[in-house]
Length: 112
Length: 119
Image (cartoon, rainbow over all chains, first blue to last red; front, top):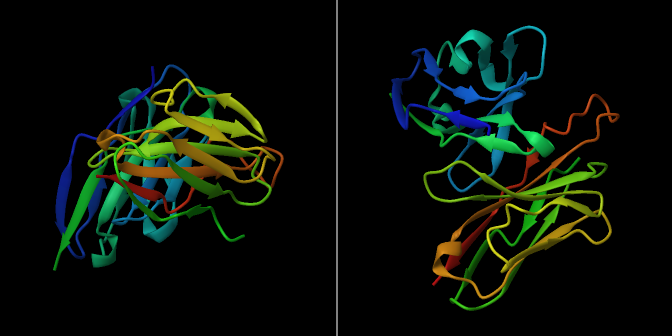
């Protein structure tokens, strides 16, 4: 069965510092991979997606992610974090029936 | 494109009552999904529709949960005889068919959710 692991429950970074959020997935075939962001009490907004092709994908708000098949990873990065990036981030893999299987999320705190 | 909408945004009910939530997907999206999210967890898939057909419902949490999409447009999720453990955020998402402007069923667009509190 498909699964997603986000090892870090919380991460705190200083404003202007770089960010990397980790995501590992388990899936037998070529995965479809996603990162979503959720602000408190809100729904999920799609940041970026990987279906095929270039393993470095660009998303909205200056985020990027790199698919590494050998490591079963799809880590999210941003070179310079802004206070408005504070939120919860979810990694997801597309599973049978096109449903999404999500990780438990990583809460990002940004300190000034 | 007004996005996925969900109503109500918040629902407080007493244990044992029935509740119904509505989801309006993005127009021309023929797939609609329901997820449940509990505190500190990622969303968990419940069920999905393609047009009016419910293609998978095995993940609905119990027979107290049911969903409909009678005309292939909006959908409702009903919980009968609510329990305190049903307290959660219920999220709806929709996705476009592959033939629609590069659409992909896995690319799901989420609504703001309905927060259910069962007292």
